[in-house]
Image 1 (cartoon, rainbow, N blue to C red):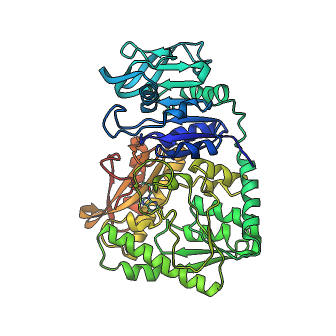
Image 2 (cartoon, rainbow, N blue to C red; image 1 turned 90 degrees about the horizontal axis):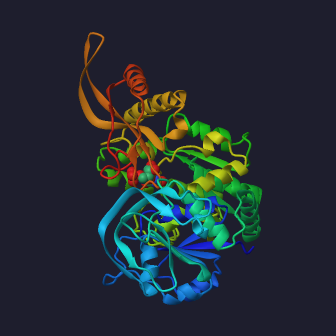
Image 3 (cartoon, helix red, strand yellow; image 1 turned 30 degrees about the horizontal axis):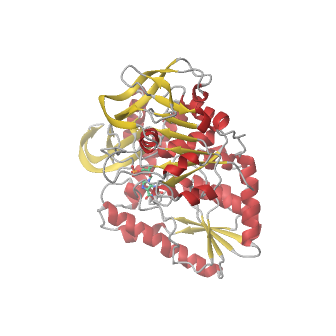
Length: 514
Ligand code: XMP
């Protein structure tokens, strides 16, 4: 199927995935490519429009990321954002230099309502600015489409050529009418119709997987997380009993999670996944004995997981395809899509694992953002409870227990975490916090319980809001809720006598607590 597509050319800015997500929210498919992508390749993709993103450089600086001037005369509409806007001007003969006044934060922008970009946008509208450079002189052919007191060219356009430049960031939510602006570009300037719909995607993905697999045998590692669950159910719908799903319970899951996963995906549940549960808890605890260093723990858990999985795969015999729940941000963050630095080594995209003998890897969710995976899950009829499950790291509670992992500590953190989640749910905050969990610190301190002195562990509560998991802000949970959680934890979880709330954002903290 030839679906309409917008291409985002990535110049290394921090909001670039967000640009693509916003376009997809308009029901238009969108992919991210590095600025190094050649013109011929871009042409061959036949995009309906091109968006140049922001980036950390000065476009006139030595070695700054550039673009082929011919990009602007392909007859394809181009929208430049921040760095992209400046680059467009620079390349086409305008002048960009250091701004006399640096703008950062929410700024009121006055727009020209006649401009296609600002159709239906208020004349004075709050936008998110973040720039040191500015467009001092537009390239020939362009007209000003918006300004601020300090930035005479906050937006510019060359309508006949369908070239648009915006100095601010319409993709971030602080730009109050940003979605409208992007929708104007996508629909009015590029003429998209909005053919990217999840039901059609799911149907096509199932059909494509069925054709690709033929009579082959398919193996899937199911963790119970959103991505692998959706991938597994999609494959089950595609190839039925040719699929086997292996669920390794490493003993580092949340409270009762192993049983819950089995209930949904195991025999007698609503899906036919040829579900095999491997209870490998003891093996993992043994391997983790005495290990305190977080990276070493991660390594051991990863290696042991592969070992267990391999043993199961051998029992199954010949496998033709291995399913992975890779999603689009993994592709981008692994440096295969856009320009972002490789941040997470745990995303094993592109490299085939060598521990199972198989012909090919299947990644049915490779094109989807997380929120789209959830939508796909709902389309497939997966229970909401699973679909809206919070992100949970592969190494599980192993990286939420500071210091040595023991079965006893796993119990403590499981119980504390279950109480925390229960109270957050009761307070109706479940969907309004990005990620929250309890971790067990390695600190013991003196307390008093009844008439007895205690010398027990402190639990740390974490709750953050985040757009992309690369940065995060601490979520403000009402004191009364925190108080209730703290009091329940110290009363109900044996060997915990203190509860701390982690007020650190990312950076400088990470989201996990290891
Ligand atoms: P950090 O702690 O790096 O976490 O700020 C960012 C996001 O990534 C998740 N995370 C992981 N997910 N395997 C995963 O599948 C991992 O090893 C891992 N480490 C962190 C974390 O839960 C958060 O959502």
